[in-house]
Length: 100
Image (tube, rainbow, N blue to C red; front, side, top):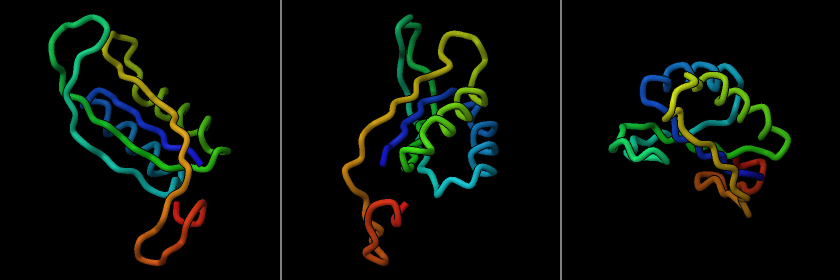
């Protein structure tokens, strides 16, 4: 299992949301974020998306985010893939892939 964290432009969030919602992923968590990048051009409003996926889904989800979020300009964002040791669904007690 993996955790995908994407930090994208606020104005591209709707495009990313539509693509991911149609893809059938198990769910996502959205947070507002602020930050600056390599060019140090001031704090910018961003959206942080967190998604838990099985390993076979990683490339597909990353490609969808990249295509939907890209403007070709500085500040399009970043995507990080993190290992996920385990995940638990609180309501049912399920764990692992069944909890995604």
